[in-house]
Length: 422
Ligand SMILES: Nc1nc2c(c(=O)[nH]1)N[C@H]1C(S)=C(S)[C@@H](COP(=O)(O)OP(=O)(O)OC[C@H]3O[C@@H](n4cnc5c(N)ncnc54)[C@H](O)[C@@H]3O)O[C@H]1N2
Ligand code: MOO
Image 1 (cartoon, rainbow, N blue to C red):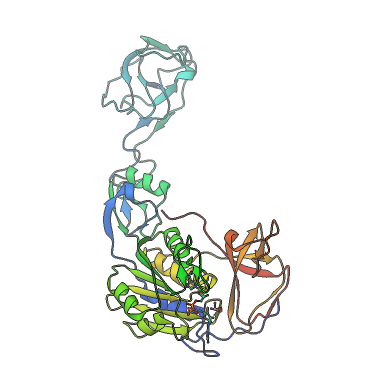
Image 2: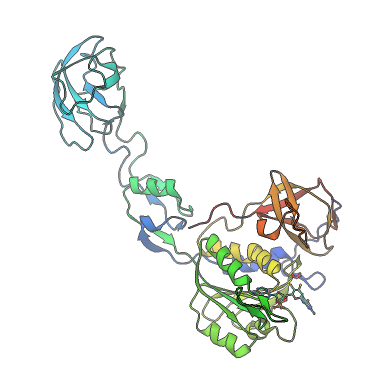
């Protein structure tokens, strides 16, 4: 890959009339503070970000308990071949605390509290009576092998101390975290709520995918893509609409929305019918910039007067999709309280050669095959095996200043997907 020196990053500096991708991302992330925490039932918390440390209400395990089905014994008496009298039966959940005298044992099941007089558990398999199932314990049990001190007893507090932190604030909650929180004694927790997102596609040429498009009309796809991407990012779509190129209609639609973020696509450029720019430029803190990225150059962003973050993306479907990944998704994750708002990137090998624009970051939809990234051809042929936009599972990001990528070059990729956060 031929590289020319990267231009130094001066915040909001303009090179060739454009601001850098990083400057635009920083401006957006600077405005996207975590939404205020709410308390919700643990069962509803999967995929949300924990807002405060969760501490254990008790030590774990709660009490000395048996790790095996067997017999709780006084080890000194339980020598090889000893015949012990069974004086109690302790299933899990038993609150009994039987005393064990010399030569006595209690049948005990896994998880049941170990009597204070016992100092080891002999598993069923190490007794003459063995594992034959019976509802009542035998009157006596014969120990085959003397247990080690403390054998098969899980001691109170050996896993975790009372008041220790079970799960830390900022954690994206998955099944393992949630069960740890339940074990720590909490049925309700403080989380950042899912961001509420409105999606608006603008353009008088847009028609429903099941319509027969007349000349000049095209099937509307951005709202479908963006709504799914919003959900995949762990946010809720609270509103979706197609609005024609009509300033009054767009204003009315915006006024009706209650959301944390609104994503508009189309009409962001300089054309005569670019109503999004006409309506939103200067509304609240919204500003339009040319960002040094292809595709995705025309971008509008800023808070509306009520604080809703407005993202105005270019209408071209690939540009809108790329813009979502670069600029919207990190903001939604930040609103959701995630400390890792950006997707992790990695290095892959370019599967072919292509040109890249000199002064802009290039972002190419790609299909990953192991370590090789195959850019989706602009005019994807339908030959079997050819990567297509529908199969996109990563974006290749080529920095500004690189004009040629050769097959075999190392390239940066952002793998997409990887599990929906809901
Ligand atoms: N004179 C200039 N013209 C353009 C410039 C420029 O700098 N000067 N920038 C170009 C770039 S770069 C882009 S990207 C586009 C983006 O412009 P808009 O945001 O105004 O997008 P539209 O014109 O509304 O739409 C572009 C294209 O995408 C189709 N589209 C729009 N919305 C949808 C949708 N929801 N579903 C499917 N397809 C959609 C639309 O029909 C157009 O074909 O501007 C360049 N022009
Ligand atoms: O932003 Mo445009 O072509 O660069 O998509």
